[in-house]
Image (cartoon, rainbow, N blue to C red; front, top):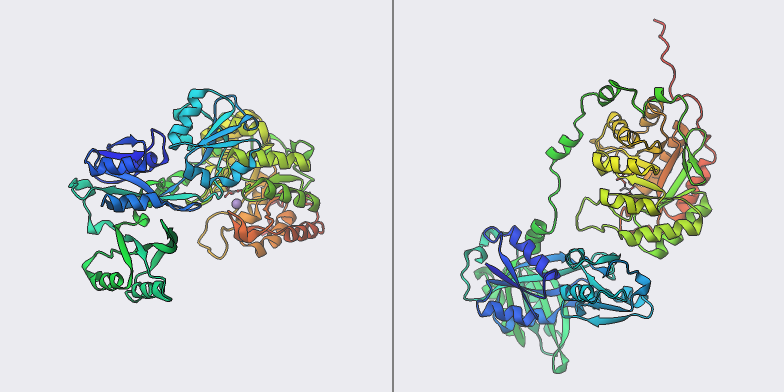
Length: 596
Ligand code: PEP
Ligand code: MN
C-alpha cells in the first residue's frame, strides 16, 4: 500500500501521512511516495500509482490552501480523513553555524507565510522558496554552508544532519495545518473504504453565490435550518473574476447522506455554484488517535506513585540518608550566585509560567526584580497535560530567560524535562527545576545530580512526603548537595482549588530533612486571588521561599493564565510578606511525653 505526498523524505505531509497509516487499521506499514508537487500527488492517486494521497487544505496562520481544494475537485478525488497536524517549524543550520551568520533561509512558500514575523526579524536575510520542507533541509545539508538555514521539523534536521538554531519560529505557537487524506473514485482498498461507524464526519464544500443582497445569508440559513453547524467559512476571490467571491465551507456531518438530501437540493438551487469536496472523518477522531501520545492511564499513574516500602529505611540500612535531618543538624543553605536559600532567609522567586517571547520575559524580569524578587523563573520546556497546548519555546526560550537573568542580575530557574536537555540547560540556567510530573524520573534525577548545579525538586502530583525525600536522595547520592524541595500542591478529592497546597509538608520536611523548602502557591491553588494568603501562610510556617507565576497580561498567558499574577498583584504580595517574620525556631514542638 502506497501513499503519495508532495516533497521528499522529511516533509510535514509525509510525517502526517505516516502517522495516519499507523493509526488506521489495515494500513500499518504502508509506504510513502514523494512527488514534486501537490498536483503530482493527486495524479499518482488518480492514475492508481498510489492508493491514497495527502494535501493541505488550510493552515491556522496562512488560511485556506486553495491548491488543495482545487486538486480534490479537479481530479474528483474522495476525501477519507482530515488530519490536524501541529507544524513544528525550526530553523536548522549546518553544525557549527550560528543564527547571526545566516543570510539565506530556504523554506516551503506556505511555511514562509507561517513564519513571516520571525523571518523579518532576521537582519540581512533573504528567504528562498523551496518546493518542500525536506528539500529545504537537504539542500542546506548538501551545501554545507553556514550562511544557509532551512525551516523544517526537527525530524528533517536529524535526517539531514542539521542542528537547531531556533525553535518554534511560526508566527503563533499553536500552528496547525489541516491535511486531507484522499483516494481515487476507483480505489477499492478495504482499509480506506468509508466506514459509517468510524466516528464524526465533516463535509467540505465550495459555494459561489450571486452578488444579490442576502444570497450568502440564504444559503447559510438553509444550512442552519437543517440543524447543521458551520465550522469554517472563508472567502477567496474567484480567479479571473475579482468582483465574485467563492466561499470555502466546512460543516459538521455528512451532507451527502440521504437524511440531508432535501438540504442539499435547496442549497444547490440557492447557490450560483456548489462544489462538494466530499465528506470524511473529522479530526476529533483522527488527530486524537495519531498525533497525540497516549495519556498515562490512572493505572500507570498509580503504579508510579504507590508507596515503595519505606524507602528511607531501605536507604538507611547501609548508611544514613543524605537528606535526613540527622545527617546534618544545621540546615543546608543552597547558594545560587549571590542568593542564599536556607534557614534564616526567605527567597522570593518569580517569573512567567512559560517564556513566551523575549519582550515578555524581559519585561516580567524587570518588574519582579523591582518588586523584590531575587530569582527569575520561566519554563522553556513545558510539561502540558494536553499535547496540543503550548509546549514552550524550547532552546529559544532558554536563551531569552538567560538574557533576562543577565539584564536584571537575577539567577534563573527553568525546568528540564529530559536527560538530553540537562547538560545544555546547566550551561545557561542557574537552577534546574524537576517538574512535578518528573519527580520519580530517576534517571533524570541522577543526571541533574551529576551536574552539581542547584536543583529545585517539585513534589509529584500524587507523591507522599516520603517519596519526595526519596527522590531528593537520588540527587544527593550523586554528590550534589544543592537540592531545594518544593511543595506545589497535591491531588486530592478537592476541586475548588487546582491542587491542595499541603502546607503541613513544611514542618514535616523541616523536621525530617536539612534541605531548604520552597512553596509554590501558584500551582498549589491555581486561582489568582487565593495565592496571597498562601504566601503569607508559607512564610509563617517556615518555608525558605516561595515561587510565583507572574505575567504582564494574565488573560493572554499561553499557560496557567488563571493563576498568573499581574505585576501589581505581585508587588502587593511582596509588600505583605514584609510584615510576616521569617520563622527561625524549631520546626516542631519536641515530643516530650505528655502528662496523663
Ligand atoms: C512549573 O513550575 O512551571 C510547573 C510546570 O510546575 P509543576 O511541575 O509543579 O506542575
Ligand atoms: Mn505553570
